[in-house]
Every structure is written in structure tokens, then in C-alpha cells.
Amino acid sequence: MFVDLASDDVHLLPGSPAIDAGDPTARFDREPQPNGGRVDQGRYGDTAGATARDGEGAGRELPSRRVSPVRRSVAGWPPSHDAAC
Image (cartoon, rainbow, N blue to C red; front, side):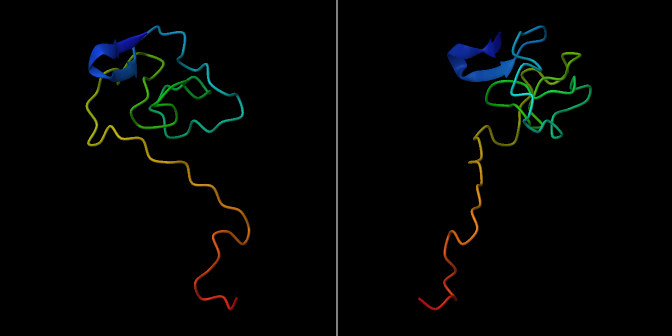
């Protein structure tokens, strides 16, 4: 399923059942084409490092393998430093 789990390379191998098996309501537009119209499961879902439906990209070295945190925004949070309290 993964390129090299022992080395923490968790890119999906071609044919992995996790390709295009993520949340059907999640975005997938940052995945390489062809992307199958659904996000991959795992660390590289909806990233340029995702494995394309045709297997391209599996194990590709990326500039950073660190996952960016999800940014969530809620109206009024975090409070603005400019706002009077």
C-alpha cells in the first residue's frame, strides 16, 4: 500500500485501495491528474504529492514532507489585536 513504510515514505503505491477512497465531500483539486474525482486517503490526499490514478507520483520526493496544519476559520476567532476589548 505504501512506498516504504519503514522509512516513513507513506506515498501510496499504484493500485493501492486508498487511492480515490477518501471523503467524497473533501477537496481533491491539488492532486495530480488524473485524480479520479475523489481525494486519496492518507498524508498526501489533496496535495501535489498524491499518487495519480495512473500511478504517477508514487514515492516522488517533495521539497518538504511535513504536512501543513489545516487552517480553520471561525468568525471572530482569533480575535484581532486591533480590536478594542
